Length: 195
Picture (cartoon, one colour):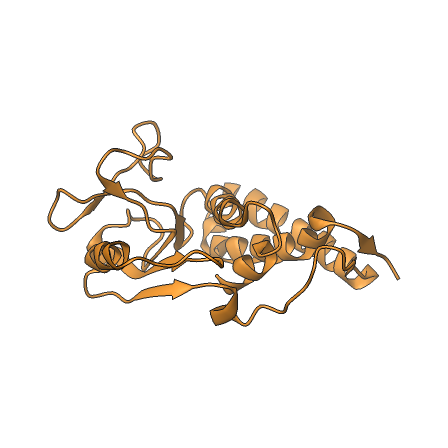
């Protein structure tokens, strides 16, 4: 999570940036990633229930249903199952300065989490290095080679699903995609120096 927070802290729409990265990970993993972005919970139910998409019940709705609470990230134990209380490993709320977590919001997110931990994360808690927009990012030939190799790996992992047992290695796809996104982030953020 901190990798996404640190990558997005200099963006204009920081929260959307984090959500975009997590949803890309979710989509790339066919919604089996343990990270779930902005899952709305029906707070009128006890315990609160996730509101899933009617078109694709493997993922949460992308809307904001009335009376729901939407934590930034829900980490689940089993990414193939919905983010119900018995499958929640952790609930995370991300706050970029100057935003603060309110008492009511904290209480409701703790209710969603149940026995699982609730955490607030931000650039300070993640130890993100300070950097201004005007600083150029450096991307090396090694970074380019790593992105190319990881892209080929992901393609091979996806293509081998056609053979028996080929899906067993799919757990390696989300970390590889996260690493690719991390390496490509400087290209999307601003000036780049190629030594």
